[in-house]
Image (cartoon, rainbow, N blue to C red):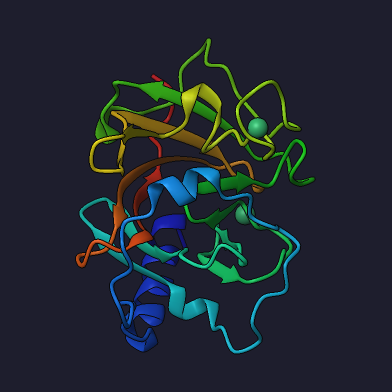
Length: 216
Ligand SMILES: [Ca+2]
Ligand SMILES: [Ca+2]
């Protein structure tokens, strides 16, 4: 079975039982608070939280679109992109974890699975593919930047994945597609689409991802 068919089947199984992800109340846009937040990655996750309900994935054309409820800054949502499995704790084979606008990957300073990321600026999702000469990045300990978080390859390096509008305090994804080499050595393409749900609540991510074509 191919990765795609495995993912689609898993996605269908998950979406069939996933609860409505809409928040019960629309929080004000709080990008400023986000930008200043220093999430405690070791914070206990509420036992009642069901992570499967925080990620909804559906197949759209030749890729997958996931809505990730990452509003709770106490909880990282771990996703194994190879199996579309997810958990509120580090499980073997996780590739990406989401916490509001932050995303860490299972490599470098964040993990041991060797997950790496390449940044393709001004490249559409459909055009993103690996090529020679790409710089493959992994999460790094906090460097000389404005925050005290590790320098996450997927969300902080290369000036981060979003542009911040200081007038209306909103985040919007840059014209950027990422390549992610997973824990199983697959190369996926990945793109942020939205940071808000339909009610405007921040931290509800829409991301697009799928298997990248082979190098030309
Ligand atoms: Ca994996
Ligand atoms: Ca940092």
